[in-house]
Amino acid sequence: MSKEDLTIEVIASNRAWYKAYVVNIHPHAAKCEFENLWKEPRIISYHEKKMRLPPRYDPNHAFKVDDNVEVLSKAKEGEPLGWWPAKIVLERADLGNFVIGYAGFDYSYNEIVERRRLRPVTVSNFVTPNSFHKCEEEVNAEVKDFILEGGYDKAKQAFIRHSGASDVSYDSDTNKLVVMSKNTPQVMKEVKLCLDNHLNWLRDVANLFSKNLQVERGLGNTKHSTHPLHTNNHHHCNTRLDFMMSSVFSQSLWALLLVQEDRTYRRREL
Image (cartoon, rainbow, N blue to C red; front, side):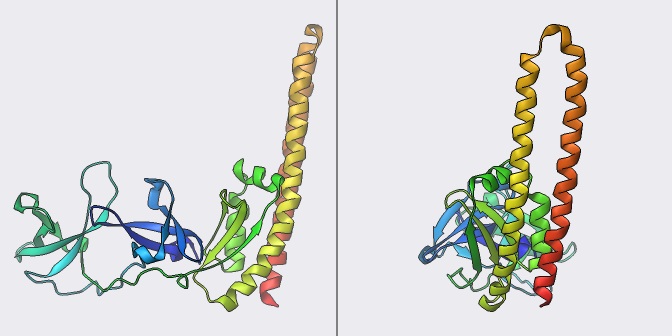
């Protein structure tokens, strides 16, 4: 499983569909995050029908003149690619390319495009409350700080690898760790058990991380209060202490990570 399992397309005011990911779901809406974060995350209501699952189509589809299609294109440089509605105006058989006209634009916007940038218009399978599943747990202040400081990436990948979830992320709006998946509700029960183990581990590591930061701040304060006559000796001492703390923290972190991975794996084997 991977984040790509949570891929959707979101329609913009220009009628183009853009790639995005579902990061949280609610009874009446879903929170989505656009690819490459070119826009701020948005919460979109299901009834608006602005979110759809990526259409499935035959890559060997035989296109012909007057077919309504969607074209992978962009309005201008610096903007993301999106799927724009268009119609095939002319087929260039000698090159295997097509001349297309964009819906709502005059002929001056016509473009020659390669076949790989075309797909047939398909019936939209809009996102509903049952398209994805989630489980979530509130986190304490130490875990929140650990995540926001950027120390969570390796642990996150370990959890996804062993739990079968598609993605896990921290939602600052709810102060919860949110696990997303396209799996069935029954499978999500198993994921929930893995999440319980994961959170126990995360609290241990976050507590260790917090204590390490406190020691670092204490060392920093000691540096500022040192008498000038002892500056060189103190700097040497601080360097050794910083190294020791960093080494101890790293070793402890990885030890706990390995234990967590083993626990999660065994949970799934039961």
